[in-house]
Image (tube, rainbow, N blue to C red; front, side, top):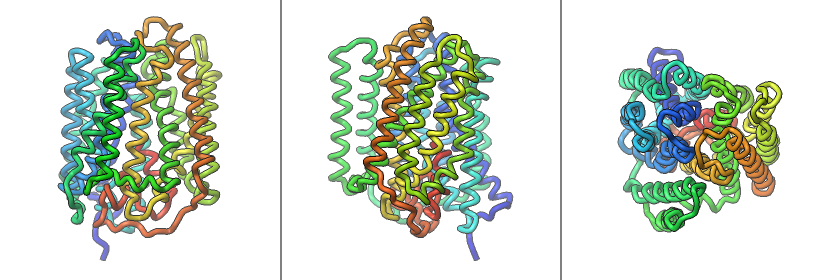
Length: 499
């Protein structure tokens, strides 16, 4: 008799509620703040570099600690770590709500990312370990769709809160949602862990990663304000920390990232493309939201609604895109997709004061959404297919961390490159910088597409067995936030929502 939660039972519905809503908290913490940036800048007298840190402080700690968070769940219990992450994120959301100045807000956002790093790898791992094998794919599919819907409506709700009350409520709204998550998790989620997890936690590796990303981000963010010796010192210190991380991981008996996975050209190539595509997306969404509000005069609600076609297209087309890549191979979709994104960004570069949504904004958003839909599912599936079965978990975790680090770096670098490090008062100056940033992003996305054509092979789906529920090790066994490898298309659809 199969053990685990059965589809359609009250316990199964409660488990889905807890994991979907918990995951949605991490997505909302990453995206809602974008629509609030102009209001936040006006209230706290913040310049563009401060806004960059408001976004990036969360992404920094999340990217640096997400793999460590998965290891903690495997060792100490996924439900326990999931609950700690939920409470942590709620508590730090209160700190964000109460922040009297920009410096306090940025510090609270960094702490918020720690909660996200605990929540992110636990959510789907809990579902996979808790549901009966025959119902696991239904649970993952429901999680994917519901989390995607929550992510889509998040900017709308955030915009409404900003317009109706204050930007501070986009943080406070996390508290009642977290209460629901905690109650559902305590009542419905069974505790699971990996009985084979062994070795010490790679705290040194996580610390070196955090230091490296922080140094590089700080240097890039400050570059627009003029060169200085300290920028070079901190930036080079960040590079040194990442180099030290590579040497440490190579010699460690318990590495957070086993570096031999990069001996696969396919795996390395996909992560290079991931860095290009997700770097483009991070910088684009940061600046597009500001452009719509600062230059075109959109309200926060309308700015949040403007990019809804992207989410809708991904929800509708990602599974089909993954299935197509299984038939024809990932090389063509992963080439055409980034080129489509580049085309959309070229169109968005023309958005200026006086532009209308239907004629200038909408075409670029739709083309960007189509390119993204063609790219993400094949990309994710190819990452998992590029390594042996025992390493699909670490492959998923690495790719997730790469995507977040890419967004972190481009949000830091693009404004400086485009000369946007001042305030938001001069709409004409901001619009000129936005155009340059979109064209630079389009070039980076096009390079990503060309690299996919050169580096990616048409490696079709292999029919490896799914991992047993009792061996869901986010470091070395099964995906951190993806489905078992029963189908690349199914896995990719779930991971698409987890971004």
